[in-house]
Length: 393
Ligand SMILES: [Zn+2]
Image (cartoon, rainbow, N blue to C red; front, side, top):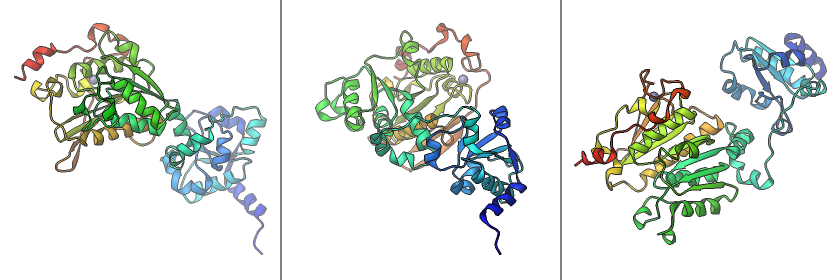
């Protein structure tokens, strides 16, 4: 006769280790990975702070995403300690995890003992519908969508790169989008700056961008700066943003932005375009190189797009801007591997992508310092720009 379900659970429990909530609470954050194996609705109703969510039905396929090292200490919990016992058994016997335990009594006992439970922010029915395709992606889910809704992203420029980036970040539900641009919409912009329309010609780009963002997603808070970023306003403007998207076409602003963001520890997703070529990288202060590590001196003036009107394939800023938007979503949600320490080159005519490794310069005048030691005088040090452009002939 086959054993009863209760008998099977008893047998399994005898083969695994169980730990008391008191012990789990004591070791939280000490390198122990806490895994919640309940269903999504249970997780959304409240879970242990810092826990990772891997529903039992997805255990085999998703556990490596939260615990790649099989010798790592894992504690698994559910509602009452039954499902987590089964999950711990699977992890130990089938998946080779060496140090797994199941928490006795599950989150029910945890709560009864008065330990803290975190209830994720819930979405309105409208938001659930709007972001339903994000909620279905495990790497984003409710947690990632909540992070997006709470994030503040600043766009430098509502031009070729800023236009597609702004639209897609608005669509993705970034809560606050700051837009800096002192320019007005011109007919020659419309070949690529898809956030603006023909009837917007002559109006400030920040207003035109705001209209398009609000039409797409009224939930986004748009903060407009109709100005040029310079040494006098940069610290005040950028402070408080989580990520900055750099689509500016002039080098002095790039250096200034780099120095200020290293000082404030804000990651920058940077792209540039010329002709049929695009470049992209993420400068995450102290995690990877900064812009000055990569370009200790400005490139030759004849390659500086802002020194004059240069031609560009209209769809190219779309491609590069959407790669920027993708990196922003990754930085905000923590999904995947951001493009830190890597420079991605795209050549549209040959349809080739090339990736170069870039390293931090230990002698870098900016990021080798402690951020508090970067003085105002050092921000944006750059050769005289008129002279720089004049050298281009
Ligand atoms: Zn550096």
